[in-house]
Each structure stands twice: as C-alpha cells, then as structure tokens.
Length: 180
Image 1 (tube, one colour):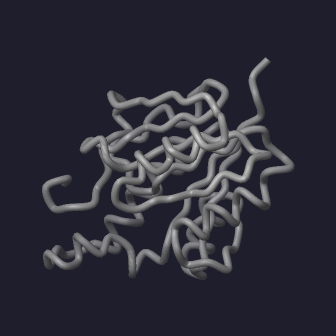
Image 2 (cartoon, one colour; image 1 turned 180 degrees about the horizontal axis):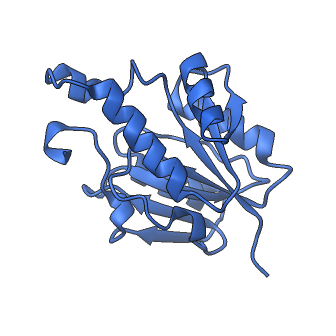
C-alpha cells in the first residue's frame, strides 16, 4: 500500500525571488519566477499540494491555481518548510518538498518515493531540489549551500533510510543566468 504523501512548494514573493538572477541585471525575473512556479505546481497534479508562503501575492497566485495555501510566519526557506512539516505531519506519512524553480518538473505528481528520506540533488550535487521526508520525526531542514550533505547527515542522525537521486531531470533548477 502506498504511503500518504503531500507535496509542499515553498514560494517567496515573486518580486523578491531569484536574487542571483536579479543581480545579473536580467529583465522579467518576476515573470520568470511566476512561470517556473506555475509549471512546478501543475506538475504536482494529481497529488495534494500546498504552497507555503508569507506573501499575499503568492497566496492570490496559488488560489487562482486552486492550490491549498499554508501561511508561514517565517520568511526563510527553512522556517517555512519546518512550519509546513509541523502543520501537516499529523495528516500525511510523508512530505515531498519541491522547489518552485525546477526547469523540468514533469512527473512530480506521480513520483512514488521509497520509505525514509529521498534527496534529489541539484545538477552540482550540492543542493537539494526535491526532498521527501517521513513525518513524525524531528527532522531539521537545512537548505542553502551544501544542503545535500546536511540533509544526508540529518537522515543519518535520525536513523532514517536514505535514497540519493542524482540523475533526475529535477536536478535542474534556475538560479544563475547559465541555468536559463
């Protein structure tokens, strides 16, 4: 029997998203961030999906797409995801945290992860683009540079089985101009 799983997509206000692209002077970064998030959210179907955000603009965006919203008191990625984990942990056996900037998000909604922790690394094998965690544990989310290593260590500390995926199309996200 499949474990119950929900997808969580943390999104910050689109006008603030993609700082590294903005620092390179690229135009239409806000529009790009919105388009990437739309593609990710559409790829999450048919799974139950939640957007976690502190942004009123993102709340309106998600509701137009008929996606459930969790308001986060935290603006940081780690804080927002921890908030969602705490709120949804009693309703689902697993949460799949997906970044809203995946270049090729197809298949997210039909992915069947193993039990334990699944980490889909970024194309540099340094970051965590998709993270599946079982609920009911004191899992500490540690996004940022070298997040893969920190999430591996967290799974080990909690004694959870680990599945590393480094060859998925989900490894491609859009952070730098070269990613376009």
